[in-house]
Image (cartoon, rainbow over all chains, first blue to last red; front, top):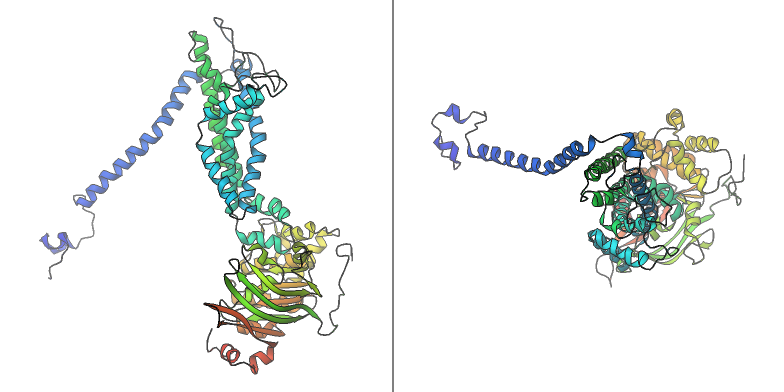
Length: 305
Length: 278
């Protein structure tokens, strides 16, 4: 037998053992393999650990308070018992709705411009760069920006803090995600599809609204839902803009309660009832965001005709 | 039949002799804002009611010329054209011309089948609807599918996705979709290159039917296909230009298909059609 340069070949005495294809766990490569598999698994577990811990902790602390009363009543005055967070739930939904109504048309429109109209010019790359920068801007800066623009100037009917201002602040946060997912979703649409539509005499507008956009609906809808889920949990931009209110919402141009600001306000109060309410609110908020994320995944898995 | 669809309805019979449909006058096309000349100085008269085939080696510019015929090149950034393309005597590249109207009257079928992600029915109805078709949509869908020889295979699944069809059927669906808007000319860019021989045969049979009502221009790599379906053939070739680095396409020879294949005037044509290069 000729000498092989491979280490395992020459050292082995028995030819039968040497030529066996069976796995030998004692080999260094197999040991390292095992070590790294365990290591990778460990880190993966650490990654999901915070999520599991947060969910479990919030569920234990807040889930036990779940009741119809919690979802429908006003928070109690300091020192009093009972009450719920009905106004904060409505407030969060309302502010998120305002934000979505502003951010979806602007964001989808911007994404359509980038993907379909811009001819890779300087303006388009500037918009793309700006979108990336905006997505990295801390949310509190968005809050201060809208505070300076709308709240401090009393732009809306002389009102300072308002649900409207809160919605606008959140829409600024949602914009980059929506622009980016629209842009990227549209870029995934095969060019042949546009040619096909244009080849039967469709104008650019018809091609986009009836062929390209519906084809890219899945990623766009997913991006929109995710951005709403992200905005709904924001606190910093709302502290400066929507403020808070212990009462039921009084229209779009008055301060409004929201779940995230309620948590921020009540969690540090010296009353047990308020602290318990903050936990219950955390539970409702986390569940709401979780459900929206699951909904986004469901949207992503839908198959179009 | 309801004629509200096309007010300037063209005559149903095309026996008006070899009338010119599209005429190219000294057409040169370049990409990259004039940097790369794709094809140079093309003169050509494409007659009405005939099938005209463009053949030639890769990179000779035959697809580029085809796309110039319905302003599809507009979609490619930095693509420029000099010379004139006349359609029924009108210059397609006149400033006042609306490219959308051009594409409505000169339809196109692409190399890869590209049905819309809609039902088979909607694939055909789409073009007609956006062009303001007022008649009976069911009737139009059926007649278009029949003309494209797809009706028997598709009639029971009109509501199913266009993607549920096989590749050859999808291509015939794309042809049906193009016919449905009743263009005057149908351009086909290697329509069979992604298909198996049986589907190819079916599409060729379809073309024989279509040429009774439409003018057809087809780009093909398959010379047998050109001899089977076309009345006229244009042979494009790539040449080295004296004052230009790189290869440039040009129209080498254009004439009756039979003459091009049996007694071409140019040596290059003779070499190509006999399989000596390309």
